[in-house]
Every structure is written in C-alpha cells, then in structure tokens.
Image (tube, rainbow, N blue to C red; front, side, top):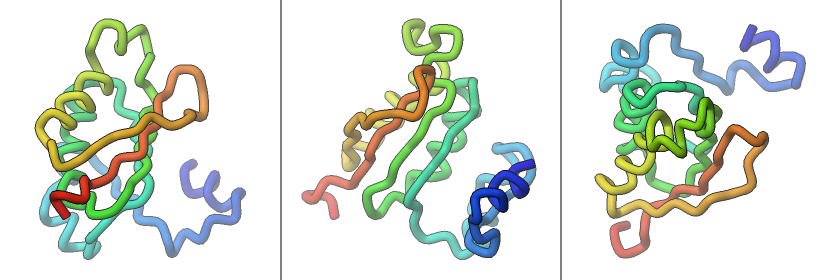
Length: 125
C-alpha cells in the first residue's frame, strides 16, 4: 500500500528505502551499513507507543547532521501528550539526552500530530 501511495503521488521509488520488519530488529547498525545511510531530512514517525518511538529516535540520532523535519503521527492519540506518554515522552527524553540538538515546533498536518524542525546546535557542529 505504501508503494502504491507513493507511486500515485509521482514519487520515484528508487529514491525511497522501505525496510520491512520490527523496529527493534531492523533499526540497527547493519541497516545503516546496508543502505549506506549518512543523514536524514524528513522522518515520519507513526509508532503509537513510547517503546517503539524510542527505538526509532535512538536509531536516528547519529544520522542527524543537518536540520531534519520530524513528524509524529500519534502525538495526541488518546491524549498521550497530556499523559506524558507515547511519542511525546520518547521525543522529550530524546531531546534531554541529546543537548547538541534543538527542536522548534512547526505547523503540523493534522490535529493529532506534531511536527518539529530538529537541528544540531552550531556550538556542537
């Protein structure tokens, strides 16, 4: 379905890497080497849970060398942000654990999501 959606929007599938599998099994150093990943530009996180989104953010951390847009699809799902759970919790911990990064909230794409511009601070680059 993802490939069909991208094709309908005239996205070149040769420019996209889709990795099938559980986050905890696929988001690792082997994947970074296999696809020669060096940096990221846009991240769409649709994890619902704290544990899954934490795995994603931990994986992405070393790839943030330039400004990156993070889109969290389930930020406000079932009031997880108010309960300080889910993607909200993992992203806030991510920022606390990475003081070399800063995040600025951006306009998001729907009422249950949140988007941020995340960038390395100049003093750390």
